[in-house]
Length: 295
Image: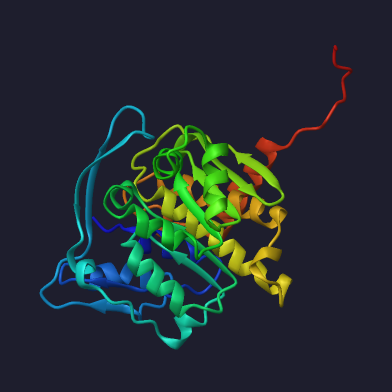
């Protein structure tokens, strides 16, 4: 079915700003697939069609715990020989998300977006096992790293989020986000720590792509807010703004898991997203009542 980092991210982020997608597809990516993302007014001019090729493919399975994912097959397809070619509009982007591809390709895209004010990177265990050094080098050039909790610990070889985030921040990024599936997400910035629970759902159909929808909501919100921080450098996008981005990312991810692929997200309305974000805020709000603690 239709999926992949670029598709899930672009559909989610399109609720906030214009999204320019860069990547290759093969003959198996046809007009029906294009129609899904163009229906959200996503700019597809930088999608390169490779005749005779096959689009990147991933297959996996989930157990009783939707946080427990087993990769069964990964086929690079046309990504194996891909050389990113960015249009002027893509190169001029203020906000850039380097999705799950070879780390060397992520670096090449980053180099072409030299003026970007906020750049985030995602990856997966495949690259940690086959190209760890190149991945770390790519991470050095971004502002934010987004991985799931297990991937973050595998990459850094640290046993918990706090120590793993500290290691990543030594490499360069000032923002580290750990996606935790049904348990929510954690974030560490220069200004502190923030945790947000997942939106509670009775029915979870397909967790695939939820992390990319989270990233789309997160980065889309940042892009939409940059006008309020005109002239700011990436380091001046503050902690409070990023916590709000976490809420929008969490809301988008919660819709994604309700059906297969992007079926639910492409039917979303801005009102539904706003309502779910408001519910998340109510869920995490509390009134502090001081108490005298025992010594």
